[in-house]
Length: 325
Ligand SMILES: [Zn+2]
Image (tube, rainbow, N blue to C red; front, side, top):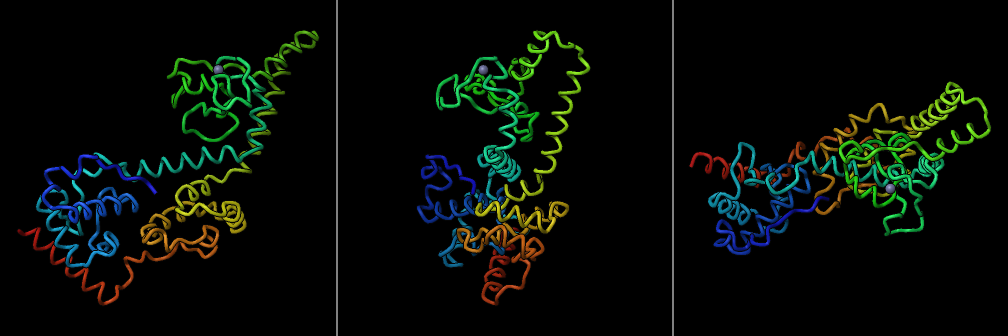
């Protein structure tokens, strides 16, 4: 769930000051709804009951009327829009890309075979300054870290290198070129070259290239077998992060990778339902996949109960009145 940013001067804002706590409460509820459901500031008519739980419908409409009057919300065809929402809050695209990146970053530390490969290639040497790093040092500048050479790039043996903490934080989310740093040859390759020349063994460059190419091909095959980019995307999107291994097993068993795009689209479509009322309707990700829930019809398209329908009709009439006012 993304956080909502609130200016600490909000209670004194001229638009919201006179309305008192209840008006500001409605304003906050609206912000939370938009952030939770990634709507970029839109509030659909039929979502009104979800926006401010516990507020009687008539009172909610009255408060919304006040918010519209002071210009904090605007009326749209199918609901409302919070004024300047994207000026202060991250967009849906930003939130999703951040979630995906965080999932990938966390995933790196559980991919022990990838990390083992990176460490055996780079040994305990920083790929930027060449100095020895310490895996026990959790704070100091010589402490060992893993760096994505291309920031926010994939978790592959080509894109992950060992770096000292000083170089990693100096590079800070930039490519080596942007940071004016150079990626050195891996320590294991330097050592191998040194051995070759010391033993007088053929410094035949073709032999050395062959050896390196083989190592690289083997590792690429391993990655292709191990990675499921579609699953990574699903995992980044799915709101309940429990039972990842079970979900991945299900993904592989049902061969869901080719359906990844449809699954992501289905999840986004039903996200508002899944995450409503503090996640009461979320289910275990493995179950969600097993039941093919990405094909569910979004609940807001299902027929509404008569009372809810009455509320939606009242909200619609309200919007109509304001549009023609
Ligand atoms: Zn370094």
